[in-house]
Image (spheres, rainbow, N blue to C red):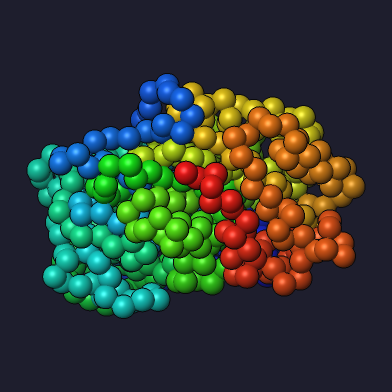
Amino acid sequence: MSDDRARRGRRTGSAANRVVTLLIGALLLLTAQSTPAASGTGSEPGQGRHTADRGGRTWVGTWSTTPTAVPASDGTVFEDQTVRQTVHTSVGGNRVRVRFSNEFGDRPLVIGEARIARRSGDGSTTRIDPRTDRALTFGGRAATTVPAGAPALSDPVDLAVPAGSDLVISVHLPERTPGSTVHAFAFQHNHAAPGNVTGAADIEPTATFDRWYFLTGVSVSTHRGASAVVAFGDSITDGSDTDVNANHRWPDILARRLRSAHGPHARGVLNQGVSGNRLLHDPNPPAGSDAENYAAYFGQSALRRFDRDVAAQPGAEHVIVLLGVNDLGHPGTTAPASEKVTAQDLIDAHRQIIARAHERGLKAHGGTILPFKGDTLGFHSEENEAARQAVNRWIRTSGEYDGVVDFDRALRDPSDPLRLNSRYDSGDHLHPNDAGAKAMAGAVPLHLLR
């Protein structure tokens, strides 16, 4: 894959590293062990989905990500390896449980052992604090087999989890295991090492990758009245073009704002952004195109994944929706031109999200689509701009969303409102940089999330 084509793929998939890094780099790093080749009940908006724990406490999501399939060209395989992965918490608690996923696997996922601990250090370090190391069990057993197409939830384990801290989850995969269920754009260095070293204070990795494999959620037991906010979006929410290992995605920064306002045990923020994601369509790369090598990472359409990724999240009471730019930009590039959408198509999709959120007791807040004039991906056109303006006008004025987050107004260039402000532009005129992510988090009116 040429640099030019890889850049095009990376940008449409919206990762901070080039697609060539994620598609090929992870495979090369794994050469020693690789072969190439829920529900809720109907309720009033704002009641959300809560599961009680002992002592009058409640389970709330502190971290999450969306799983996707992998393209046929991704030959990543683990065998008798420990996969050690880091996640960043948003709300604190005194017990924890972890959700794993084999939802896109075509064979059972065998977990030989899994452990969780707080990280010692920052950045990409693999070291854990041994005093906090805990075994994860499944029905009281250390090992479990997750059927193809299914998730698995660990038993609760006592562990003090500070808000805004890093947790390390180590999983031993004893059998030959294709990396079939993944979040491809983690913006966090994770690692694999030979054998079962799940309990080691530090490991010597033979592979490093910016992905999360088979890991989709962490929830904590915290004070009654705590709840979660779900950020439901695409690459801009996923964190594209923000610093790696820094937790500078706009949902991370929103979580810090909420902790400052309400304390460390009140609001979780769950990032359900997927680079390249669309409201209305699953990935459908044109036959023979480069997009066949990466489009699977874009995930199922937002309408298709809503129940799993939003409505089923522990403690979810609010969802902030920022989607639509890929529906406008992908047809004719990474998707067939026949999948072109109109403003009305997007508005109808937003209405479905609102209706389904309300059915599950969530309040839904609409985020306006950011400007992208001059983007390097070829998304912008007069027709797409007119559709963006129409959708944003509807979000702002219809009153159908419970609240409005005007990301467009916060990040646009005052002298040319069809463009991103240069202070917030990562360079492709579509994705915000770290300063832009901070401005996005600052644009969320906290009173909406009460």
